[in-house]
Image: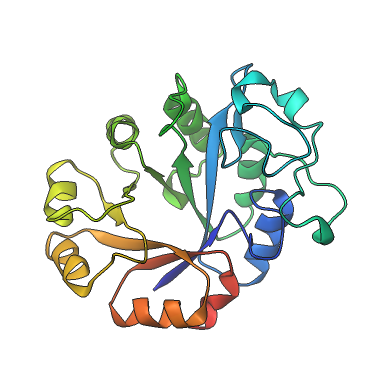
Length: 235
């Protein structure tokens, strides 16, 4: 069972920051999950919320700011005790660093609430510019973004994130060429895992916070977990 650090080591460090990513790698986890959006000037930036209020000392929507303006805000709000200042990283900055490691990256395209024009293409261009095609996969709650990125890069795996369980999810994903099914932990059953595996699809589950949850999912034979505490790699 693979362990992916959800927004980096977000249980102890400011989420989606380079500090959280570096600390995640130090745990020996298999991969990092992060979120990408577009700035006002068209740069791909790493942040989860469509607004910066929860994670920074600023306010307003991501798309209202340029990259330079966004990086003036302090992004340590979720864990201020872990560091006095952390900036919102660009996806370019992240890729330049992660290519020096053996860690893979799940890139979540944040197009569920704001559909950013060209986010898929711009994100893929950065991945290719750093020769990371074999060290990433894409995911999104927006199935149109999943299908679009899969059409653009058929050899890179893609996962469909869902809030509610879907019956015959494995069959559905196979029919549309989606490699992974990404359900929430509360609604996952052994039957769902078995049906996905019968259709050749992998199951990665979000968001795990305890060792007990990780053990339960391992017993269900899931393929991977997204966790705020990547030191669960000892499971």
